[in-house]
Image (tube, rainbow, N blue to C red):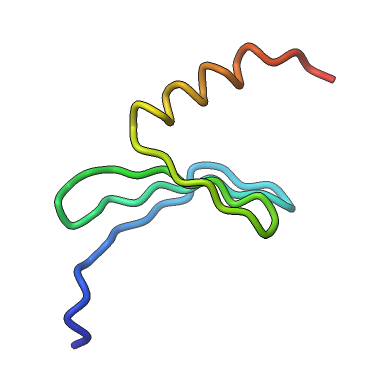
Length: 61
């Protein structure tokens, strides 16, 4: 046993190059993560909601 707290993760969406996933921290708080190549962005719930709202406003190419 490593003594590390348990973090539960789940994939929200995935493409060939990107992945969005969610982690439930030991304290019960959810964090959201975007892996964009070599960059990973981390968000708390309110930030994630704002990012999703921003993405919905983007025009399709």
